[in-house]
Image 1 (cartoon, rainbow, N blue to C red):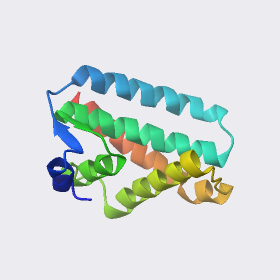
Image 2: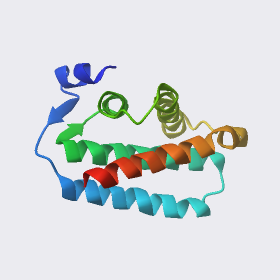
Image 3: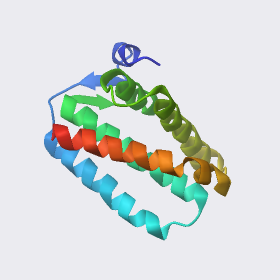
Image 4: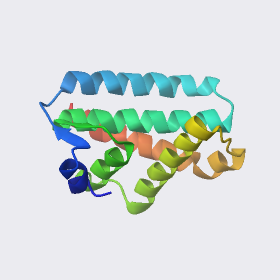
Amino acid sequence: MKFEDCIRKKLVIKRMQDKEAAKGLKKLADTRLEEMENIRTATLRAESYYEIIKELITSLLAVEGFKSYSHECLISFLEYKSRNFNKQEINLIDQLRIIRNDIAYRGIFIEDDYLIRNEKKILEIINKLKGELNRRI
């Protein structure tokens, strides 16, 4: 879904810029990232990586003065607003969103090789999000 559609459908609303919320969400994402060393299961690691990314994007929205009621619209915002992320990175974030939903709502487990193939790219995305966020708050 395009970001403009998210706004039109009121899945994203404009509000006051909230740097304090952005800082709190970034701190939560940082805390989750620190705890990743304690998570061994690929399924729970993938789910946690998505939560970290979601919190960082939500933090960027808060800085910009938006609130999203849709995970798809979070990703659309990133694609719309940031020039730092290429199509493959956006697709990987969306893939993580789908995997997280499958885990949370269907009890699906993923194989270890998913993270073997993608963990480095996921961490690069997280670092890019943190860098972009640090420049804005």
